[in-house]
Amino acid sequence: EAQVTQNPRYLITVTGKKLTVTCSQNMNHEYMSWYRQDPGLGLRQIYYSMNVEVTDKGDVPEGYKVSRKEKRNFPLILESPSPNQTSLYFCASSLLQGVNTEAFFGQGTRLTVV
Amino acid sequence: GDSVTQMEGPVTLSEEAFLTINCTYTATGYPSLFWYVQYPGEGLQLLLKATKADDKGSNKGFEATYRKETTSFHLEKGSVQVSDSAVYFCALSDRRGGGNKLTFGTGTQLKVEL
Image (cartoon, each protein chain N blue to C red):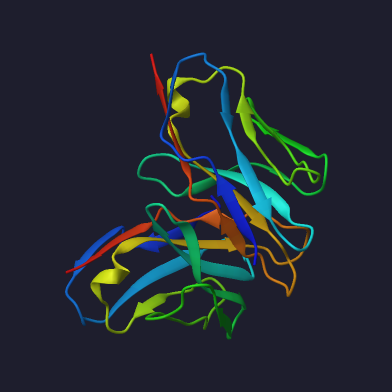
């Protein structure tokens, strides 16, 4: 089954404690990205990657890091989380070729930073 | 930059009522347009899409027509069901510079009651 898998689904952490949210896709997609969803703001792109070892900032990258060492995995790293990073996070993947191919989303990670 | 504006919710309807959720966009290129749906506790799923002007996307009884002259992509359904209760996101994708970045509206929550 084609899917994007994120872990964990729920996470409560304290300010400053480094954390990683994992994302894995099984569709051999080149393009992967992270979004955060906040009430009244919709989804905003944090970082994206067009292929292995190719990553770039999205619209709200401050406080986040990513890596793309393998095609299937795209972890999101918060080196020093702060309460304003409390949000619902989604990983998404899609093909690069073709005309605006469908993006597949993970089930989301609800992060609370206290 | 690109932006998407959609009507605020929540929208509450009785079962079998007609649904319209308005969506307008601003983009300098020729974007593809999407409607995504988010059921409670789940990630986003593609509902329908249109890749060029006058295209009509349709799925599960929902329809939307890409109107370049009014820069709109309104979502409609003739008879909603309780199972349609979800949050609906209008989005655009403009492939300038490569990649498949999605720009989302803020989402419209739909509640359908018996």
